[in-house]
Image (cartoon, rainbow, N blue to C red; front, side, top):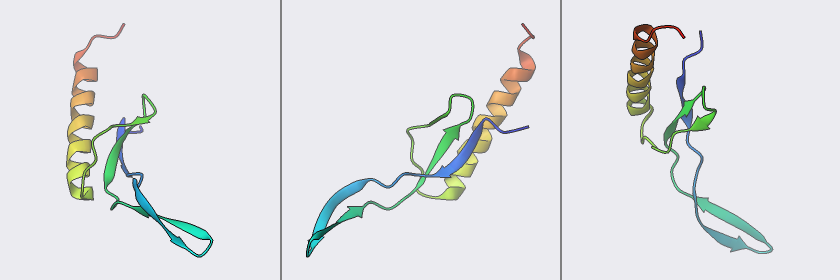
Length: 75
């Protein structure tokens, strides 16, 4: 069974650019971690600075999701 939420590396955000001759190089902010919702196929907006924090939140959300699935009657 695939977990609903998983930890993925965050997408770096551009903070500016520098020019070297004819090329432009983009500067990015440090990468953190996001949670990805496999059911809705989207990243959650919160960014976690460390994988440990993201894993903790991910396991909590997966546990809550599993408990709600087990407690709700089948339709």
